[in-house]
Image (cartoon, rainbow over all chains, first blue to last red; front, side, top):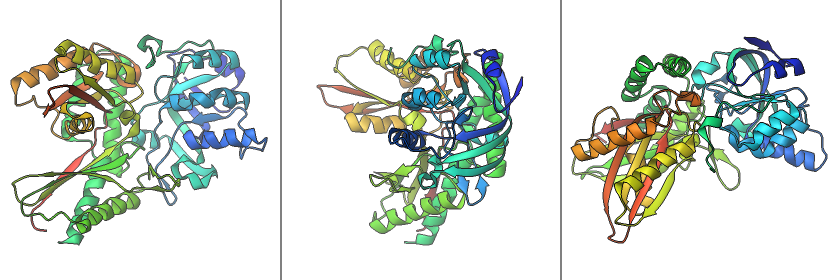
Length: 177
Length: 275
């Protein structure tokens, strides 16, 4: 199944855990320090450098040399669990990363009708071929942890947590169990 | 000291390690791909192999996490270890990472990003010349490292349980199928280094010592019985290999360290004899 951004509420609700999706459109990278910056700005009631409403966040810190984008695979999503509620309140539609998330994320996805996707972890050269263009959006001083806009074509995803809170990784337990 | 030669050698190793999947790792991945009967897991293994082809052909890093550059330096009897040698290695690391646009993932307390200081582990041999191994370690897997200080009389089962549990706790976060390095003995710090060193040698050959080989095989089977699989999709391959390294330890304890590598286990070595 192919989907185009922005994802509508209907698109999000129709997605089921385990489903394979090819994504076309725009995603925004953000990882640990970009999230930390978002939270700091929100704490000071300052405007964010981009409106997060209906955006898809890709947990990724790419390789970039000059104008050339290199490897750009997903990083571990669970490190961003702590920021997830605030991101959903800002309107983030979905996140893309790798790995399991804390069980509380299932409830959050259900409550806000949001989706967590995973993509091919450790396959950064393969995923590079699915990105048609990129540009810097914010926090350039963070290097690879800056916010970049990626235009993606047939970007391969699997729905890991759906809007019902179903989690394909529930069978694996959690690291804290 | 032929500084230029050392710099250019290290630079080549940086590129090779980051863009060429090790032959032993690729071989085990191909075997897993052919043997896997869980369709989704098999497809994920196929993408891993395709990724390696693209990375090599286009000189793109296998993984965007080009790691913390770790260097293992094995110095022969005729080698004088000096600051200049260490600086030359650093320059090779810096040049290789910068030229190919590999990510600067090292951050200091002032939040300055760089490729340095890389970490060097120095060992000594009686051979001539020195061998440099560049081992970029990603932190998705490094974060899953585990240490346990056992009692000296602990059972083999308890050790196995700890190792298998370390992998279970890693779940699919650290990019399975894994290569699991285990260090047993030494001290709390050195057993974790042993666990990392276990990942440098060929992983597709059984251990020389048959009892160690049997232990590795039995752990391999126990770990694969977790059915985590590539991307956490299940199947037969949660790990590609388990490698154990041992060292003598104090009579009052038995340190066991686990260092997990993702499927993109990266390292490249070169020996320099005329320096």
